[in-house]
Image 1 (cartoon, rainbow, N blue to C red):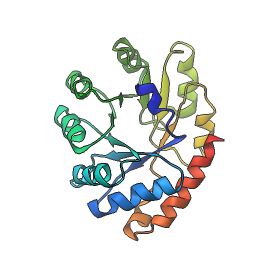
Image 2: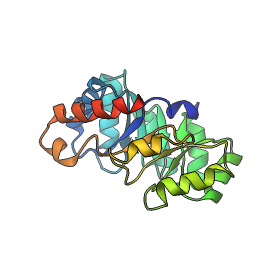
Image 3: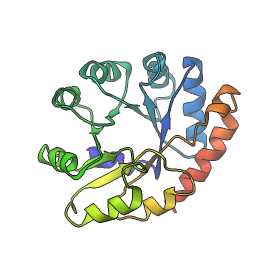
Image 4: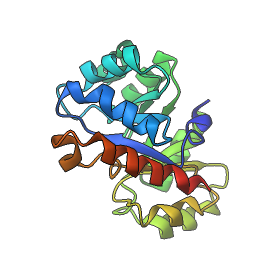
Length: 206
């Protein structure tokens, strides 16, 4: 089921919200631009409340919880209505908690050993994070040979300009991008800009 997460959109929006009131407008703006998934990160105090709002008011978008770093967050995100989880890395406890929710999830891996360990648990759809600092395209190309059964959602430092190069790799199902919801656009409540950026990102599927 986790592999299906890589097929939802060419770009998975990685969203940081400072105001829970922005949650529903952002989700609707992404949908209007043709992006049907959102990874709402647990990096702010309003994240769980924002998830609850999206789950209640925009059920047609596939809601994910990102930056899950503790077992408690995994459960809280599931209770808030998240349909999948994303972790920047994994520990034994976080892995156990993620499995315990019953939700599909993308565990983060930044090294070959981490990817192999996750594959031993039956996880073949992974988040490659932080993508650019960890070697980016060259790294993913290099590990495709020894790890042909794994597919990735690279996240971290990827831009609208670099996304197509990542998406051209057979081992990449989608990329994670924060550029769809720029801080200045959210601060200005410029949700039309989010829709425009989402439309451009959705077009990368072609």
